[in-house]
Length: 134
Image (spheres, rainbow, N blue to C red):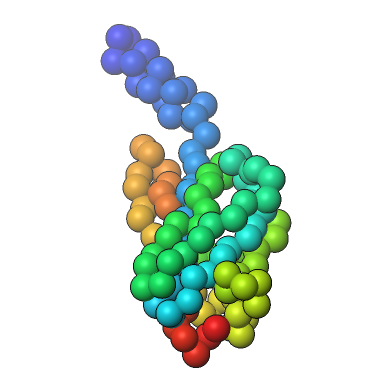
């Protein structure tokens, strides 16, 4: 009877916890220009307008957020759904040439962990920009 109660308690704890998926977006600036990323995110960590600056030949974290859910996977054409708005430009406010809304320009990876038997983890999206993209 004691084992049954322990099993029921563990089952209750596991089923009452909501798993979360994280999303991380990175900019790998391999150009010779300083780039500015302006965005407004969605999700739990939603804030007002944000600005990130990427120095030449560096990689920066643009945005990190979490949502309720399980089974991290590539969001395909909806991969930017964590952003209300996003734009990348040079320091002199000239928009870049590359269409950052196209999924084909971003690489995807994930880090899946298990929360009991539920898959949780992090989705990683990386955008690489070079001089020809500016």
